[in-house]
Image (cartoon, rainbow, N blue to C red; front, top):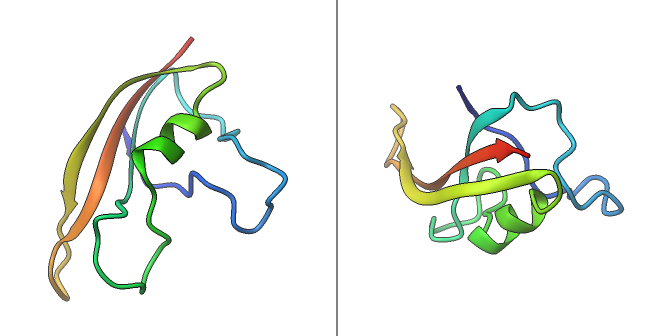
Length: 85
């Protein structure tokens, strides 16, 4: 399963970690800070992904990925593979 979720809280600055009810083995896709421009979701760094999942999760890998869209150029992203511990 691949989910696209907001990993860092802009709406609730007091909540710094992912608390969604994720399945035990999860893959998350998010916009990378390498994506040019400022439209669309906020860009996320690998460090922010690791910090969001630093309690109760093992970050198995974070790899560069591409989100293919039909209305413009592809989007640079991170694909994070996570395991609940």
